[in-house]
Length: 140
Image (cartoon, rainbow, N blue to C red):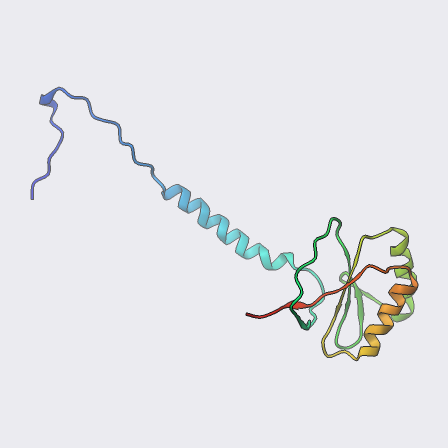
């Protein structure tokens, strides 16, 4: 097995190598992939709630909605802050004064229907009528 080396005796200059070294590109892409894989779970904020399944698609929105969560114990959270039941109406009226575009209601699937309706009643009494019930997408 012989190797043909360029000969200087022929008088030709060496031709430039026209291959691209993709190793640095692959290294950068793998680092970015790892960064996104680590940060993606941190972007989901809120109280862990066991949501029901639904076939409905995701909503399109312009502004960040207000998220109201009800745990299976019946505790109500506004974002990640726990709200006492007697303070809920006053807090919702303050939010209604700021004119939010929409309220997302996340309720645990094991909750009694009356508890969810009580919170929906408080939302309606405060003037927050654009309420979306959040569910988990259909498993495929």
